[in-house]
Length: 290
Image 1: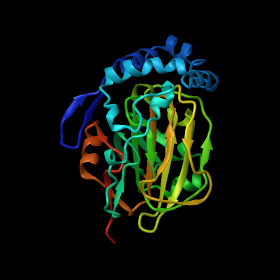
Image 2: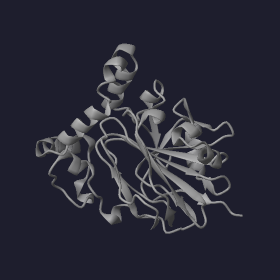
Image 3: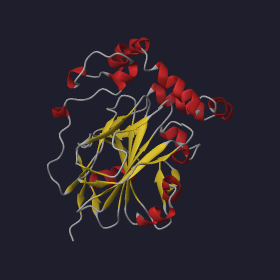
Image 4: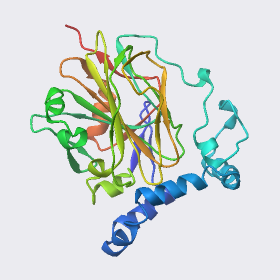
């Protein structure tokens, strides 16, 4: 798979993990064998191991292989692998755009931007997803037709905390249980994974941007999506919303029609089948002038 940064530099993002997943999801026999592995029970067992002190032995090899600069984080030593995975970055390393008329990214990751069309479907790596099946709410899905879906895919080397994208009043979290499948694009070609993955979402009702939907999608070996505020409460742009535990994950934003104009480079890159590197707090769209 190809990635592009916001300066236009293209890189091959294919990793050993991608190649393994391509093999596992690319053959019928291995897909059948994978079924028990991606069950919630196995995911929980894996999650518990990653909370143990023994699992911290995996931290140093991972840091070396992915060239992670731990000096950017509040801690440099960790009690478990999950303690490392959910590490908190120093605030100065993720500046939140000061322009209140722009939509910010809720997280680090690789973004694709899609129009939500009249048929209620949008494309993610050659697989069509119904907004209604994603949300399991027909009325709410219709509300976003004509708007935009922004899909931000996090890989294991990304920063796995995320923030609110606007000031406003959030709704209660809606939780949808599911079978854990990887959010790697290879799997998308085989499974309608956003119908099967565990996910949570809320609406942030804002003064200028309408009701922005923020969804977190769990993935293979992610035992938990940890959102801090569960009920209806006021939230602040840039405020930490929650974090993912171990595994690749995805955050989906949906914006109402006629509210936001996505940044042109993100649209152009998506049309070229390129995912764009972004960081939490940077601009991904602007308020549409009335």
